[in-house]
Length: 272
Image 1 (cartoon, one colour):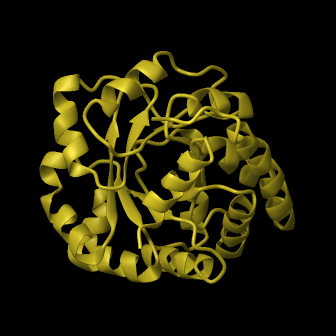
Image 2 (cartoon, rainbow, N blue to C red):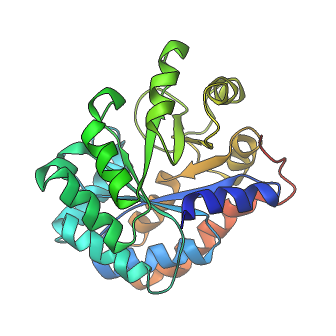
């Protein structure tokens, strides 16, 4: 079973890109995090990118840094994050990709970490700070336990490096649309269609675009060029805005996610 490939194939048949939603596991607490995950799934997302809370989230802007801090303060751990995945699997088969850092994978043993993730129901690993040249142990474990690997291409990545990155990936390629960290931006980065086209010259895998995408119009624009669109901070902000009334997180998240998912209507041109 390849839930990631199935989701991209279904979206392609429907003439649209995939919607990938990012949330930090355990933010602001286990029950509220599960409610937020349920809400975005009910809104119709295609892939859930679940951040594994880490004390030093180098790729994240202030919104997601604070989400990780809230999650850690609430008592989330990698073990509890796997419990969250198991709870999600009770009501959904949406593909789940862990957005994580290598320290968290390495600390408990690479093979053991990958096996535990696979057994909980995780589909893929995006390990932010692990270059493909150093990823052999992780790749071997993912092959053994059936997890997909996701690697990042940045605006500063030279095309000569793309064969190395794309050869290491088995799930999809994540194009970071701008230099810097995650966060809501008023305008999209430039040259996204050109960058996606360049990456696609080196891989048949789907190419998704993230960082700085926060409105339905931006989702629509990126979805016209890419196979998938990642929205994170705009969703995480819904949690921050409802910390005083956590019972409101599910309905507020559902409404916001529905608004964003609507940007990828079936009328959006299919991506090749």
